[in-house]
Length: 415
Image 1 (cartoon, rainbow, N blue to C red):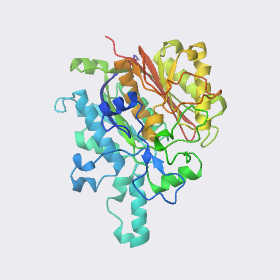
Image 2: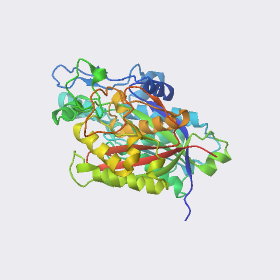
Image 3: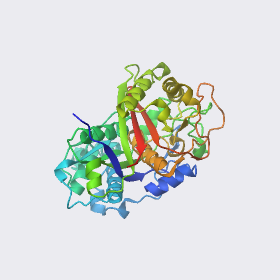
Image 4: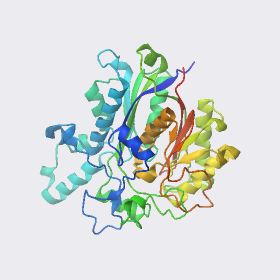
């Protein structure tokens, strides 16, 4: 069976350093940090007091108050970015086959804000005061469901939950749906709204988050730097529109890039730490390259997982060097989490948006806050300033708690 080619025709983004694709991308190229002191709740008694919150984002600019009461923020973010992506794609919703148009998104924790809020209501005010919208606001699949309802997309619809690999795995699954002929169009990506007291306390108490830059938030996330000591939690969403090449060409779509390959593995090693030497990542990268029918030396840029934790950055660097050999000495690698923080299940989705823009504009975003090289992280991390680079083929890595590894390969569109 021949596999169909799959292309990207629309983008949408909400991130701590930009509330649209244009603002997100310009923020990345400028090295703009979106990390700030947490404003959503009182952090006086928390060791960690910073996060990558959305800035100047008002749901009432997109929804009326009645609808907002029925939506968790992660669904709001997903709907806003899906709308931007669909609009950008130029899809004519009246003429497409909605039965062959689906939605697959990723989210690590789904509607956790609603869960925490309603648990407080239960504790303080009793069972009768819990909202009847609690369950349909909280469940992790609801953002994908809400997107389908908004646009009338009746094709495959579900949510991937693989921790910080969720967004990338969602894109990979959507890619497969089109490749093998199940659908013609997929809306895919990830959404996360996890800056809550419980998540900050939980990640903080396991010492996954940095707690040493509360007074200088913009300097807190420093992937691959020798003095990194934990990640910064972020929020937001990224969405892309995938289409089969023949469908996109038949409607005269503006094709942005092509998805070439997807690889996924599991370390089967530890609940939070990557396997020594990044062996699971090595296998996922190799699978993605094989699926893409691409040689390692053809990769121009890698958008790294690069969380700013000691173990992840070291193991990811080792995995890249294992696969790319001598090419690793010239290969450009950067972590946009240095500017956005870590969006958990949405991180791979906004990375995909960044990779498409890199392919279109032949520019790669930097790793900011990179000041002290680490001998165990010995690659070119595009330190502190964006760089011009002729990009033809790029890779994006995503790794998650539980040992999940997901890798995608994208190529610049060329007829």
